[in-house]
Length: 481
Image 1 (cartoon, rainbow, N blue to C red):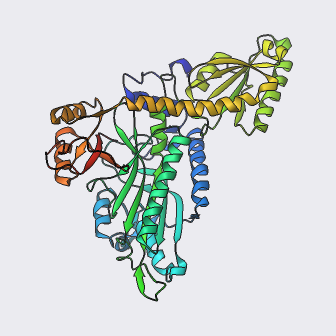
Image 2: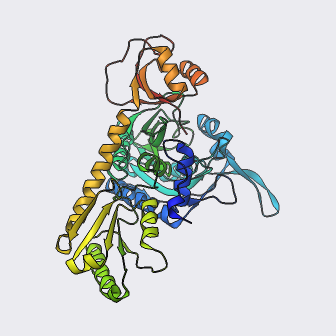
Image 3: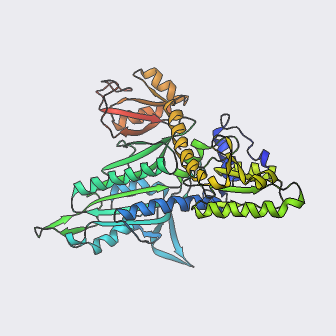
């Protein structure tokens, strides 16, 4: 493949076409023989591994432990919480045969693990001494989407983590739900350099079976919002049907209060959409599988050994700084081909080393984020680590500036409808929050409420933007994938 022609669509002309080009041609993912079940190629999966490593460490710091629960869930268990099964039943994939025999009971391929996990929790939790129970698992879930699937953003098999916790009190559970949301926000902004908005979901949009769903939402370039992670306060909605109760400190039987929370590969999709450009991926240094690529440039065979030797020295010194470094000393591709390749896959820093650099003990540096170039001496290679940190911060600030221009506040119903119908802006407006009102907004515009800001705010208007009833809060509205 000619690297210069790898991305055939401009981001500003066709975001979806551009996005598919980038995800496929950068080697992140591929299609498989089963619709909606993609292949995560090594480069894409290594990004997920970086996400997993960061979040796993943060979860364990607050006492969460990893476990693994079955893929298959008996129908009788899945249906114990009525709202939960009602919300998921259209998307459940079922196993009805084992080998050549029909099963006595249908088995659901997990759409989420609340029910199968809480069946075990009812046996494990007997006393307040067994609480809190803080468990997470890294797995996949299957949701038989009938909508158009999109790589990373919407698929039938979802790569994710899901945490499920049980507490003595509602206060502890609420605190857990919000603290996890804070970890997700920190991760999105600190690691993926993607700005997010914290909020609550509306009654219509919340997780099936939750009392409250907290969310972080990302604005992407076509003025859609993407749900990047959610954290649910479940109250006792699952503990009662699953009989998860304990003897409290007064020797009374009580039902536990619970939370569940998760983030999926969708966060990767948001990262690609926010940062990528017409040349391909632009990866934040914190999550890039390769942070620095070293490319020896050999024009005269007489200087080959010296250039290769110096390139190896530079690469090794950078590795000792705990940077992820790749020395591309292949001789079957030209330097120009390699330049395009590493732009395509989003490597943050490229170091070119030729005869001039070898003689002067320097490196020529190019930064993928803004295309800037520099020359750094061998003795100042530590500067590259500092510059990577600067790039990480600059990517977040650039994204914040861009996203701030994509939001419109309005008190005018006609403008509200026009902006949403044409996806001209993400709209923030005062709203009543009623499901019937949201249904009418969706019917007329195709948009939904994405989140109700957590921070207390002055109402944009005293009246709901759509139905005119008294407004309860401000909310963000947009289309979504």
